[in-house]
Length: 292
Image 1 (cartoon, rainbow, N blue to C red):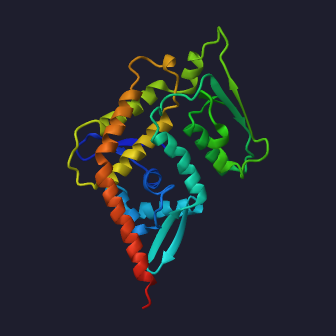
Image 2 (image 1 turned 90 degrees about the horizontal axis):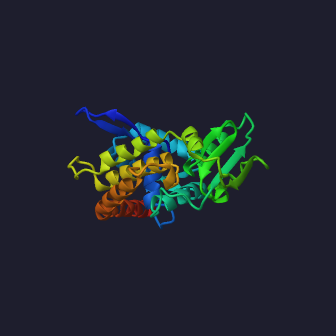
Image 3 (image 1 turned 180 degrees about the vertical axis):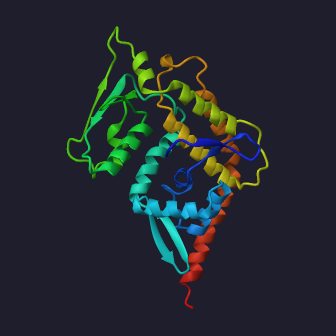
């Protein structure tokens, strides 16, 4: 879930560029994980992402990669290819969903700081990348070589649960710490995080979603998927720093209000569209099961 980048649209205004994996994770996190949903047709997923500006070949390639990563399972039913979440995919999304729908997504849990060091063999680059991604999602940033820092008391056991079976014994060491008098954390925070860049991510989100509703021709389901993808990117960018380490004009509360206002406005129409999509999957499965 990398941060969304910005490019210029046809009108010359900045437009966010969303990766298909971001959008698919947002979609499955909103409508599939921990819900009684049938396997979804590839064509339906392609339609949703096309509404978000992603071409069909890019969606197909991303679905293939997510199958290889064991996040999704693929099955052929008649002429259709269908996809469903795996246990691993559900675990990853479950962890994210708690923060996506939380009421205090930009506040640290507890006090003090959580520090982590880890050692992953050079030949396990994919595992190292997955570990770094999990740490970044939990608000960690590298303070210096080999030492990562996050605000508050991070539940590292839950955060790393999807990786536990792959991590070598003793690969990760973690501890909780309090700053000592005379050793304020301000300089360390500025060394670990680019506060101006984080502020910019908030302001870009507010600019994208805080204005009046426009008639852009997108379905409510595609728009809701884009909204959640952008929110995931913002949650990943913001490490939940303590309020006394950011200025009084820090825009996190404004981002929160904008997100929930737009989310609620899209709720009914997007849900109706998804229910129709899921019902279509069930009816096609029933028809394909009938004797020819």
